[in-house]
Length: 333
Ligand code: MRU
Image (spheres, rainbow, N blue to C red):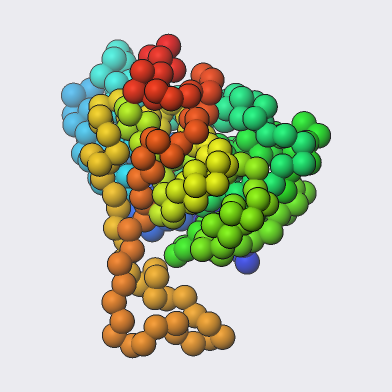
């Protein structure tokens, strides 16, 4: 996987042969973004199957359960992680034959999860791009592009498809404190795709929305509850509030694997709180930004209530309110 912590200054591909290393890579955000985490965990399970010395199907399934527990604890908010692990465990339960057949089946399923993700992103991108008008300026939050998925992207995939379809799109990129996924990763991707953009501080979004300079807001999601409440990168809620106050549509772009119908509302979504050092470690002119001994709070995600979400764009179509009725239709077909 690409070590996303080093971008944009360094492009380094790292390889692992132990599933515990994959779990650590997810936790430390070598790889991040909900669909990318899901695919990484699935390949972690393929490694666990290969690492296991089990000689019976039952013993191999026990080793896989243990690996799923370790991988599943790496990060709590993005439901794609447990979604992918459950899918691998279903494959493990239904595969017949010997341990080598099971190892092969787990690897095949991981590859299918990865391959499907690219197709799903392209389908979502098609639905979303139809909502973008030629000449639109949009605000994008966090990184939701090829880096956050297996390829193409969710919200950024929409922008990319609109651009490639010949629409002129200008992107205001939220820098996305504290880890700067926007300034570091989204800007890096937009440079490569030749899409015009400018980085803005997160707290400038309200200014641009209120002064009528923005046509649409796009973001991804790490988990969507059954009622359409959207958990996404910290700052999404404030962005959606400002968009709503200025009658600018706010779209969440998500594969159906990010929709968790088992949770009735967003208050039930577990929110990861990361080390305060991520907030404090930033330096200005080589000097710490806060006094020695300062403490910080660092929730990595927030929940945007469904009333602030104009539509949820999935690979099965664009879902409009009432989400509580309409999400189930795209998830269950
Ligand atoms: O903490 P991160 O960088 O993993 O958070 C990522 C996001 O919040 C993305 O917006 C989300 O995963 C959807 S993008 C495919």
